[in-house]
Length: 255
Image (cartoon, rainbow, N blue to C red; front, side, top):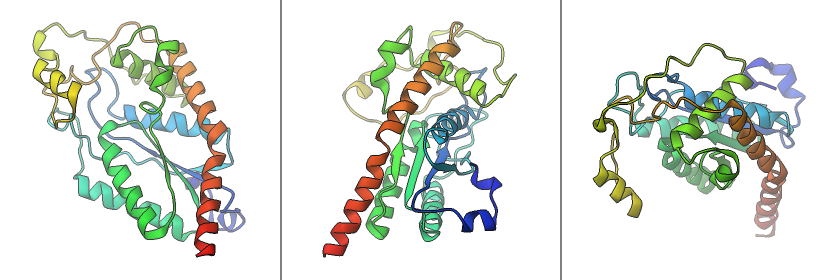
């Protein structure tokens, strides 16, 4: 069920305490020279719609624009100020809470949104006492990578998942011709790699090849296996969100 396709009367008859609300979030940014700018949106949507078939849920319209971060200086990327993104997501979640929805899930694979979403959901919890569940299917389930993907390449993994997502969403013709990198400057600088190996430092890519380098042998089948395995794992554990909500209500009542 899509929130954008229901109406007032349908909403009135929905048991909002029983429904999960799924919010797909992505960004518009460069993914190599040949993958669509909305790659992260499409992947989040594919996970969301696959999950929607497994649990009693409604999928909200996707958030396309967000904080892109590392790709902000590359032509094609649209990066929204981080404070505006924070306020936007907060306002959306606040509206859903005021509509009496309790079980809210955010699906996002864009790493640049991680901190923003976590800060927003901390604020929501402190102000409303509602535990919104944030899932990053790309990072939270990397333990599955070795059993599914043929190589350990991040570009291979994301491209495979994108190809699978496009198949799920029935979108065709969005992947351009592969143009392989041929220059050493396309690689991430060694000093950045060494710093990221021991901690965090803000950095930015300087060309279109650095973020998701084109790969020739990405696998739709491996991408589908990953999506299906992750969705099964989420669906089999999602009832714990209701258990947590009930715990918080009882705790508040006892106080």
